[in-house]
Length: 302
Image (cartoon, rainbow, N blue to C red; front, side, top):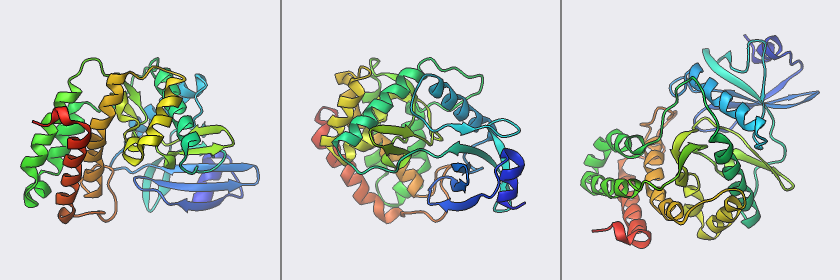
């Protein structure tokens, strides 16, 4: 069935103009109508079941109830989680109100707002419960499983021993019982926010799950220590972020990139399309990880 007809059938939307958006893990479509604009998200069936998407929507609705600035899902005739045909397949789908504004430029003000949003999400999510299960990004998932997924490419590129030892050192850092844990967005980047004036809206909770809160800003730190300080300023204006958590973010620059490299190699559940890198990239990537560790985590290096 044509997409426009499905939108009319399930959401009562007519005269829709549908334009595919450039996204990586899932399929997203801009839906423009005479009465407003929406984002239709079609989930990758290899990485998310309908029940897992329902958990995401329950979390989103909880955050909205707590006043967190997140994109609002639109109810269909069957609830918030729908099944829509796309590319000849039945796909789990959710329609969201379009987040006002646009993707922001990097700058101190942007990262202050991003830090505030992260703190609001963490604070509100501490009271979230669901009967549905969701993966937890613990040490096993973040390190052990990622190393196993890319073990063969690492062996092929003569990097396995180096990365295995590095993983063991990172696990020692995560053994700190004082690190904050709870539901995280897990992909809180500028690609997943819009800013309209001084108002931010967060979307795409597809990767959300329970983890170490220090993982949330690792991409900011990797990009810029200056902007990481802005992120901390915003976060700490809402919620405590201890010095132990701040120090752990430096470890997550490495740990978080394990998942990213697995995805780029085409080995993750959510990977789709042609792999972005092959084994020839791995020696240089591992060199960068070890250099980062030597500079920022000298106490972990034996």
